[in-house]
Each structure stands twice: as structure tokens, then as C-alpha cells.
Amino acid sequence: MEKRDVVLKLLGFFILAFGIFAMAYGVYRDKPDWIFWFCYIGMVLIGIGILKKDGILIASQLNIITVYLVFWDVDFLYRLFTKESLWGITDYFFNNLIIQSRIISLEHFFLLPLAFYALYRIKINSKEKKVHWKLSLIQLILIYFIVKFLASETYNVNCVFNSCVSFIPTNEFHILTWFAINLGSVLITAFVINKVKWFDA
Image (cartoon, rainbow, N blue to C red; front, side, top):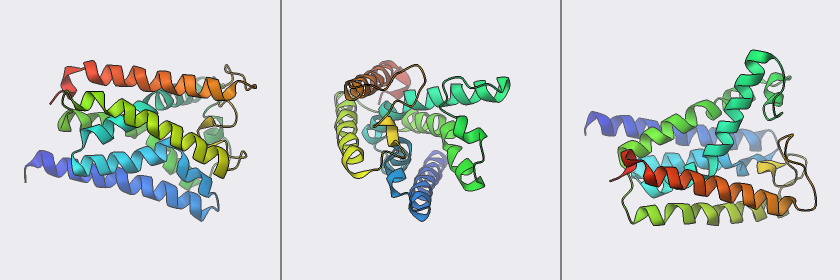
């Protein structure tokens, strides 16, 4: 086995294990709704995708989580350096948060670079470019309705019930806003992935 394959397998096991740990911790805290967070699902599926060398699966998750994580990271860094809230996304991190939750939140920093590195190594071919974004949209629809009807509004998983940022109001059109934002995020990320030659098989 080549060194590169060993690195990918270790990376896949790490991301998969971290995702399972995050989900299990939510269940342990009697908050099973948390297992439906896009990032948690994304970690598990990206880990599986790396282990199977499945570029479609990796790309489909990146389409969903990339914009979310970029906004989270920007909000976090702004709060860290200015001591002021920007969009309010990461305010919870700076409150009384237990150590386990802080550790899980670290995935917001490492998931994107590691997943994009894995996609760079594994690649996607021209046919797969037409598939991964469609899988993302199917997953978005499924997760929305699962959360809407099975999860509690208290935790507002994936911002399904209310807006998670201060500059987007929650109103009677929230479902349309939610789908428009997520559709745009998926299509923008998929477009970038499909155009960057580094990811071509």
C-alpha cells in the first residue's frame, strides 16, 4: 500500500470516528436531534467516502457544508479578535460551553481543508460532475423534512425552524428562504468543484 493510501485511510477513519463521536455525544446528552446537523452527517459520509475512495460522496457533502462552515469560521474569528458578535452564529462557543462540546466544535475548522484534500487525492470524473450536486439536493430535502417533523424546534437544527443569523429575518417565508439559501450554496460549491482542475480524474 502506498503512503498516500495510508494517509487517506487514516484521514477517513479520523473523520468518520469524529462524526460518530459527535452524534453519539448528542444521544448521550439526551439530544438525539443533534445527529441531523449537516456537519455531523457530513463527517460520517465524508469519512465513508474517503475510505471507499468515492469522490461523488465526498463532493456531495462539501456542496452542503462548505458555505455554512465558511460563515461559521468567519464569525468565530471576528468574535475571537474583536470580542464582539458579528452574526451571532458562534456566540454559544464563547459562553459557558462544556469541554466535550468545544472539542466537537473543532470540526468547523478542520473538516473543509481535510475533505477538500481528500477530494483532490481521490478525484471525480466528468460523469460524476453531473451527479454529486443532485445527491446534495436530495439529501437537503430529506433532512429538512426529517428535522421539521421529528426534531424539536428548541435546537433549531440546520436552522430549519428559525434563521441562525442576524441579517436574515424569520418570517412566514422562512421555508422558501431556507431552500433558496441552501440551493444557492450547493450550486455555487458544486460549480467551483466542477471547475477546479485539481479535482478532475
